[in-house]
Length: 106
Image (cartoon, rainbow, N blue to C red; front, side, top):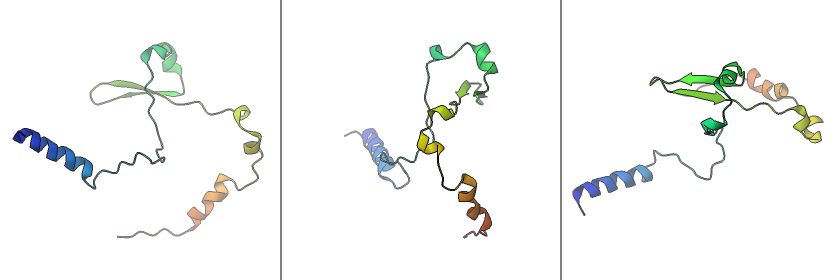
């Protein structure tokens, strides 16, 4: 085996066997996704500029990206069980967190 291939193999194997990578293919705690939509499916640019559910981002390299946020679900698409929820509200669930004294460890 050539020395270049050996060095490449050692680096490649060390990257994937080191404890520094935290990749778990079975983890379902991803809080975001990126859906790349083909440019042909976008509405015309004049409508995009007026759209409240989108945001134009420009990188340091002058690359422009349009972020389109999903529209919230209407109450008509919610199930009857969700509408008749009798449990505590979000505010009631979070209130103990604001009442506790905070602590930090060094």
